[in-house]
Length: 170
Image: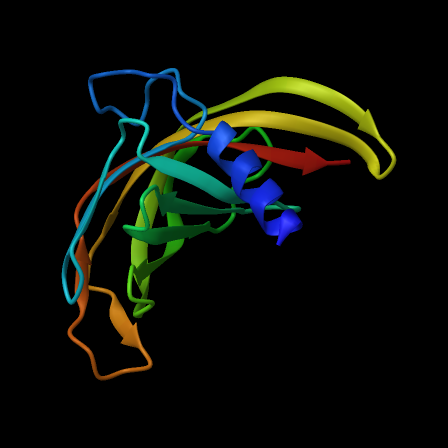
């Protein structure tokens, strides 16, 4: 229980920068602006209502989970093919949504544009050099996300924008 509480506290400290314009491309380190409708209704405003729970980067690609504060739901992005420091358009992206009552949806027909991918800090650690980047972008899904398991009403994710920090290891 202590570990879970510590991880949640760590995730919450990564949240927003107090902006009032609702733009996930603001100076905050963690933000999501997205609206989910259909089988679930979830709204992320980009105004300090989101925690970044996981932020992974590997040889290529970015994975992040945004949790709505107050138990509103979770939106996950799996952005394929992004190299360290790279910006660009048309990255294939898997989007996942989990509602407050734990219903789940997944979709593969989404694309993301990365507009910011800036080095923030380099850190020496026991597991090697860690390079921390601030990443921002926007995306859209061409089709609704299907329920997992199948059977529930699909959800639609409107155009979205996000900011999160990622760590590359070398």
